[in-house]
Image 1 (tube, helix red, strand yellow):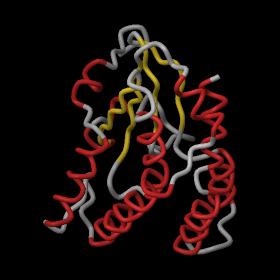
Image 2 (image 1 turned 90 degrees about the horizontal axis):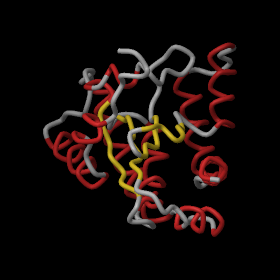
Image 3 (image 1 turned 90 degrees about the vertical axis):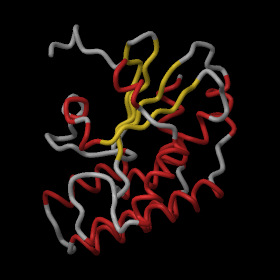
Image 4 (image 1 turned 180 degrees about the vertical axis):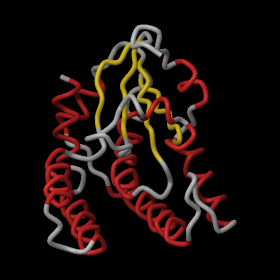
Length: 198
C-alpha cells in the first residue's frame, strides 16, 4: 500500500476506548491470558502488573497547566490512535496520560488497537526496525498531524544505549526503566506532547 492510498479509517473504526481496553485486559487476565500472540506465563504476569500500573497512574497523574491549556485549545476534531498490547510496560506507563488528556477536550477521541492484530499499521511506525509500542498517531481529516512513541526520548535514548551495550541483565534494565517512570511521573512525556501540540 503506498503512502497516498493508506487510510486510517478502518483502524479508527475498529479502535476501542481506553475503558474497553482495560475491560478487555481484565477479562483476559481472569482467564489467565493477555492480548497478543505470545501467551506465556511471563507475558500474562506482565499484563497483570501493567493493569495495576494503569489503574494507579490513572488516579495519580497531575497534568501540568501549560499542557492542559494547550489541549483545551484544540478546536478541530481529531483522533489519537494508539497501537498497544496489554503486556507492554511502556504502554502501561504512557496510556493513562493520553486518556486523561483526551478527557479534557471533546474534540479528541482516543482509540486503541492491538499491535499483533494490526501489523500493517505498526509496520508503518517501526522504531529502529522494531515493532515497539505504544505508538500514538494524531489524525485529523484522515491525515497524520503528529506521532509519538514508543516512550519519552530520554528513556528511548537509554534503551538504545542499553541495546548497544547491555551492562545489566534484561530484568535489571526493566526495573531501572520502571523506576525512572515512577520518579518522572509522566513529566517528560507531558513536555514532549506540549511541543507536539504547539
